[in-house]
Picture (cartoon, rainbow, N blue to C red):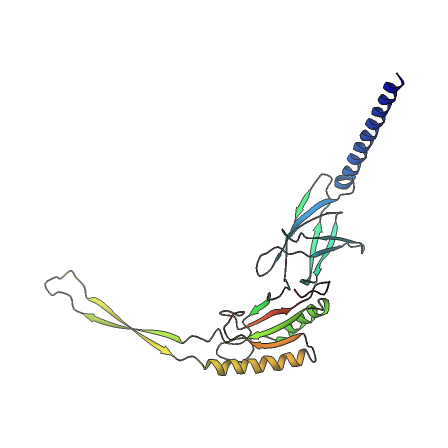
Length: 273
């Protein structure tokens, strides 16, 4: 009899514990999604150039200075975080991506709500192309824009990613083919005189004239010298920035003639990646 009574008491205690846990969870759940105006924000982080998923840290800085951190999945790039309503500065940073800051507004909601927000980053793994651009004018070694803008961006990368090494490649991929122009000559002949309804037929003769492109090697050397000079000016004594010629146009395909490539990087454990 005592055994049966004791067993029933144990069952009652277990039931009460389960009930109280369920009640607390429901109240906590209600507080997260309703009372405090919090919502679930989720999305995906991908590489800007390849579209591949990227693992990185996401730091949400609220207007009061509070920081909330999460991390995107290394396989899918997906991330998810519960956030109170506020205006956030989102900072994406890691050893394998260039630091990026974005704005995120989370509106208050009394009911369960989800916000979807994707991010793209510039990845910094070995052989990743950080930048491609049409830096030089056509047929020339003159710059299209101010190199200082590119230099400022790269200085930020070197500041926050202290293990990364970059190579500035110059090419003449925009000039390695001769320019062809087509000349069309018209030749009008009379139609059959017995047929008054027919008009004169028009025969076209097409001639192709090949205009010689600038000397490929000479243009490459000129552009290399210009780029080398600018890099030396903006990155004095910096051993993590190099200049090279992209002879085969591997990194700067038409119409781009300039690229920045990751040529070395180490993760947080000092492993060459």
